[in-house]
Image (cartoon, rainbow, N blue to C red):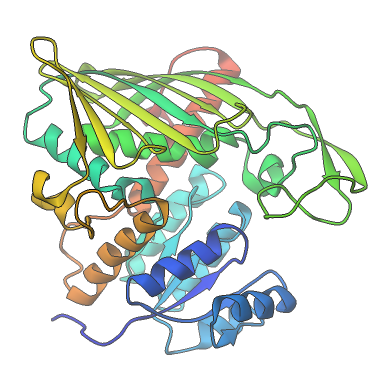
Length: 388
């Protein structure tokens, strides 16, 4: 039986992505009870800025609130495991940021806890929810692309271009041993596996740390915080996580692929791009031009398709809220994922196949990351399933 009452959420994390979740939840029609930061002061400041009625003092206080149905976890990666376990054991649903955990042991344990809890657990691979990405996936499933030969592309940024650029993600103890691959590469890997409807089975990787040492601001201001580190006192910090990575891929069914990721590519603010080469046509999409998709042909003129509900299939139409020419972008992907997730919970049939990325997808991504890291260290191909 569907649960038709208004679901209520709370958000853990007040950095860059936490407020994005709050905004997406409000736009999706979900009641947001409040927010929890790393300190009481950060909780109060975020609640005031976001117009929320509660600033939680601790996770204990948040989880004790019986009115909260779902917890969004947007804290640093090292907290994902403990906070997700505690939330599920408190009987609440979870939507966690990626990567799901610091390693595959944690993610496997999380998957087990989620399955035993009877609660619904999702990972925020929001890029799937650009309407034209959904349309690309449908085109593959409708057979319009044909047999997949290969998929190429990557995800590039420049927010860590300078040695003085600093964020907790650069530290292995906070973000994990992989950074660019885990932080942005997992979005690309999740997306292309979703579109291709097949898993990556083996990887061959080479990674590069451009800055083996970065300058950490003494006062705590970090890149990506909306402030500047200029003229601040800094201390040198050793960095082992990668700024760049190049990964060759093997897919189920014989397809091949290549992904590159960089957080030191000048001028690229947030550029995810893929190109699928099939036996009938090719598809290309870029997050910096999210409302158009290129379709390549050999024997007739190429096409550029605009995001228009009248021109897309039913799956993409469900997540295209505006007429053609009225652009949808990054914040809309969160709203659309949340609608999918909360709609599933409200429907009440937890035996139904989820249409959103789950903890199983998040665990698979951790296995991929560990295979990529092993491949880089050993300089060889690594089978992903060998690490289960």
